[in-house]
Picture 1 (cartoon, rainbow, N blue to C red):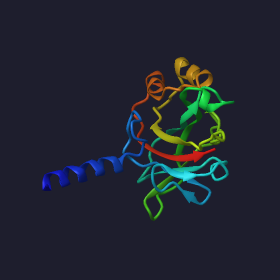
Picture 2 (cartoon, rainbow, N blue to C red):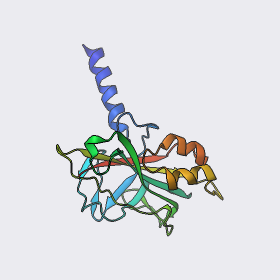
Picture 3 (cartoon, helix red, strand yellow):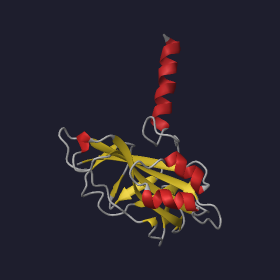
Length: 193
């Protein structure tokens, strides 16, 4: 009995430490702080509205941020048929990729360093906008943060993916094409159309 309780507790701890949705690859355990206006994404899968997520969020990480970073937002629950989502197949949809994020100052008293950028691309902000569905279906919007390599220029194959393959976007293929490592932080929230 004790053994099964310990195993259950360990499994729950592993699940609760993931900052990416269950089954998402690559799994990320470090939390990306994501705040829309004054509303922070406290836990993965938190419900948000289209209105609450209309403007680009503020992002941050725990501790010092001494590098340069790339941020991505991808909808894991889009459809290949925008007009009639239930008639299509499930597909990822790339919303945003912004580069050149840097610390905007020292860490807050809570230990969070806010990251900012003046970049508007390579894929500019596109707010969550899931269509109304019957029955309602929440979309998991996943935020990913990478360390940006020094002097990084977007390789041609990665740029083609960003510009021409937003529907059906494959994060793992992008990581390889872009020459990036695994994301260092993540978070996700749900929006229902």
